[in-house]
Each structure stands twice: as C-alpha cells, then as structure tokens.
Length: 323
Image (cartoon, rainbow, N blue to C red):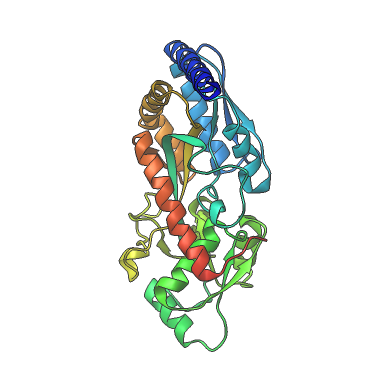
C-alpha cells in the first residue's frame, strides 16, 4: 500500500511538473535570460557569448544578460547552470576545457547527463607556429628535425590539459616523435617565451599570433582544423601536411540544464542558427578567429561525446595528470 501510494505521489508530482513546464515553455520567454560564461570578461568565449546574446535579446524580445563566473577551470560557472532550474532562463557557454576536464579531474556534475545541448556557437582552429630560428618550414621538416636532433625541441602549452597542450601531445603521438612540453600559465606568457626563443614550437589561437606571423617574428607551419582558415588561407592544415586525420579545434557550445523542455531547446536553437548565419555576426566572430557554428542540438550532443572520448584517450596515453 505504501509503495503504491508513493508511486502515485511520484506520478502526480511528475504530471504537475510536466504541466508547469509545458505552460512555461508555451509562453517562453517572458522574462530575462542569463547566459553564464565561466571565465573572466575578455577572450574568445566571452566575446562570442556577448555577440550572440545581443542578437538573441532582439530575437526573443527579452534581455539576455551575460554573467561571468570564472574559477576552477570553468567548473564553477558550469556547476551553477547544472543546478539551475531547467526552464530555459539559465544557459552556459563553457570554455574549451569542457570536454577535457572529465578525463583530468573529479567533477561535481556530469558533463553529458546534466546538460541539454542547444547549439554549436563556433569553432576555433589553432595554428602551429615556430620560432624563425628553427630550420623547419613545413610539418614534415619539423618532424624530421625532432627525430634527428640530439637536443630536445620544446613546445609551449598554455596550461596543463589545455587544448594547446593536448594538440602538442596528439602531434607527438601521431608523428612518432617526442617534443618536450613546457607549461605556462596562459597563452600570453607562452607567446612571449616563443618570441624570445626560449621554446621553439607552440599551438596557438590564430588571433594571438597573427600579427607576429605577418611581421615575420613567428613562422606558421599549419593550422589544426580539417580545412584551411580564412585568416591564413595560404597555410595548409596539419592533416594535408603529412598527418592525415589530425584535427584539433577548440569550440564554444551553448547548453541549458538537463530536462529543459524540448520546445524551449528548439526555439533557442532555431533563433541562434539564424543569428549565426547573419553576415555581421559572422564577420565579428571571424575578426576574432572564430568560425561560426550552427547545426542541431542533437549534433552538438554527439560532438561533445566524441570530443570527451577523443581527449580522454590522448590524456590516458600521454599520462597527463591534473595539477
């Protein structure tokens, strides 16, 4: 009897929640929306979020407010959204470590189960740059140089477990070489030491080094995405330069808490896909090296899982540990 009553109560509560969710989603949105960015203001993630939030505010006729909640490799802001009400009024644009962190540390949330994917906002290919004193002008020449050189060749990384770090480790594995990783607290110090010749190689965002490439202070060997970058059209991809299948792309996605009504997800996805196709939005993002995204929420969910699997394998095989 008790079990039956308990089950009946559960069904009543569930039915009430579904009824309330359906009513809320039918009128969605009727109040401001918060988009959490789990890093400090400035940088690619924050910039992309603000460009999209401004357009989404106009499309939904409700304010979309960007809230910066930095800390713990992005986990503080992400956890806030994981615990938020699943009503479409709290969103998050995680930083690029989002699919990497599950393999590096114990998290207070489940990266897949605790979120509803909305849309892929943009991708950010890296560029493999070297100091001009290094006698390598192609990826193949760099690989040969590392294999034959008696002294170590170092590659900078912008932090343990960052995309720049894992790009170097994946390059090592696929090329069958061993460049030594040198850890920095951010991309700025890494670029500074590369310019000074203290390290020889770096996988950088394009925006951070484009002026140095143009001035000849750094040499670009390849970009890391599956296609050439519009910002560096004459620079080949790593894949077409001798390492087929090499693909490292930082990316930004928008997520809502798990169990957000499908109608709300669909509305947000439809509006954001239209926004990402706008010429002025595409130009603003391109100016920061971001290639606009799009696609379905289901595609983002599948992509997230594939990225977690991919980087988990690299982390395990490279023996990377959280600091």
